[in-house]
Structure formats: C-alpha cells, structure tokens
Image (tube, helix red, strand yellow):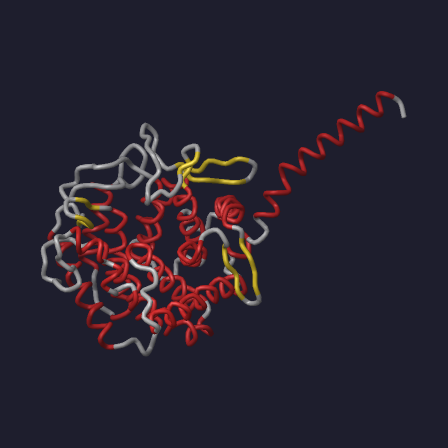
Length: 380
C-alpha cells in the first residue's frame, strides 16, 4: 500500500471512529424514546408495575408499624404514583381495574400527617387539612388534592370519606384563589411558589372533571394572573418564589417552569403551551443529548431542592420535568434529546415485566412515570 493510500485509510478510520463515538451513545440512549413518545404499552406498564410493587411493599411496612417515606419526598412519591397510574389507566382503560385502587391508596397516603409535618411546623402548628377555613394558603396540599382528583377520576369505588376531604380542599382553594388579587397562595408563611399554585389550579380543574363542577371563574382568574404577575417578561419563565403581593423573591427558573407547565396542562392548555415554549428556549444540546439550563438570561445561582444538581448551568430536575410538555405538546425531537440524557443518567433496567430507572430511586421512577406518560387527555 502506498503512503498516500495508507494515510487515506487512516483518515477514513479516524473519521469513522469519531462518527461512531459521536453517534452511537445517542442512538443507544435514545432507542426507547420514540416508543415512550408514542405511548408504548409495554414500557408504560413496565414502569407502572415497578411502582405497584413499591406501593405493595410500602403497605406491608406500614402494616408492620414502620413509617415509610415521609415529608415532602413521601408526599411527592405518593402523589406522582397516583398521577402516573391514573394517566396510564386513562391511556389504556383495560388496566384501570388493576391500577385504580392502587392510585387511590397512594393518593390517600399523600394525606398522612407525616407527609405535611414540616409544613404544619412552619405554620406554627396550623394543619392546613384540619383548618379548611384558614385564610392562609397552605398551597402544598395541592399535591395530595391533585392526586385525589386523578384517582377519583378513574376509580369507580373511590371512598366517600376521601371524596369529602377532596371536596373540602378544593372548596378552600377556590375561595382562597378568588380572594387573592395576584392568584398567589403561600406554601410557607410569606413564601409563594407559582409552581405549587399551578398544582392548585390543576387540582381544581381535575376536581371539575371528576365531579362535573364548573370551576371556570377561578381557573380564568388564575391563568390571567399567571400571565400578569408570575411570569418574567424577559424570559417567559415562571419566577421561582414570590410574595403573595407579587414581588419576586427569586429568579425566573426552568425547574419551576417545567413542573408548572406539567400542572398547567391539566387546567389551561394554552398557558401550559406558553410555559413549555419558554422552557424549551432553555435547552442546551451536545451530541444529541439535551439538558435544560436552570436560570433565565441575566440570572444565575446555585442548585437547590427544586433544581436538583446544577451542572454547567443545567438542571437535572428541569431536564426531567421538560419531558412532560415535550410529549404533551408534540415536540418529538426535543423529547428524544431529553430522553437520551434521562436514559444516560437514569440507567433503565428491566426485570421480568418491570422497568425501573436505577439511579432515581422510587421518587425518580414515580416522577418519570408521570412525565413520560403525560398527555393532553385532561386539558380543556
């Protein structure tokens, strides 16, 4: 072989190696993306069964006197399990009989006193569930309220006592939101999170679907004030923390916007789409893998409980949250890029008929079931 031909062969080999190194990881990590996007029943059921198994184990532990997950993490795990199983049941009605009672049990566990103890303490001992007439916001209870609504929507045997608690919560939230000029309710004294209030709106909207109640007035008020008060005009992102007077206590951030876009999808599809488009403007892509930059332009800060780890400005939480609006609003390319990153970091594992993401734990799997099965089925 001549020197020229040898050099050509080496050059071709290098180019081929670079192409393989650049393309193979993206192909491998994205191989299930299209199936998730199209609602593949096998994938949805595999992840659902993983959470069913956890709920069964959690029931056994509680029956034996163990407490299980508590606090915000426990509340979030049980809420997202209820949402995910309900969404799967709506998309695949043949599984409703299996998943409906489990969704109801998970929603009921999100109401346990241990799930809201830190909030009760912050409110100087006032339990928001026990004092529905309180003028205080207690917006954190929107998470169990939404879980109850979704379970009630799919479970024909939804218990009457839970239905009464659900009705009471929704009535309190409707009254508080209509009385709030900014449509902001505080989660902690003096601290309102627009994302939590989006969950309030979602809970009210789903209650309407489950019971036939007309909540148009309060949902219209909420959506109007989100646009007027809660969205940063320069970036289109939700302001992460605010006072109930509408003053910003934090920056416009993607993690809050991503989760708010998911919740808003239950209550106001047009508003949810606006939030989604602002969120997608935060996308950063390398070799076909995407992440969502946490802070809007002109702002910066560290990671926290809301954002998860922030690496080179990219939020782990916002990246996962963005899967839901990417699917719900038909952005397959964005969904695929985000899913590649989720797959790479989450390490999906199959065992029999079950699927789990190994690094996320039960909370991560509950969140991903909700986001990967998010759709327009409930949006008005």
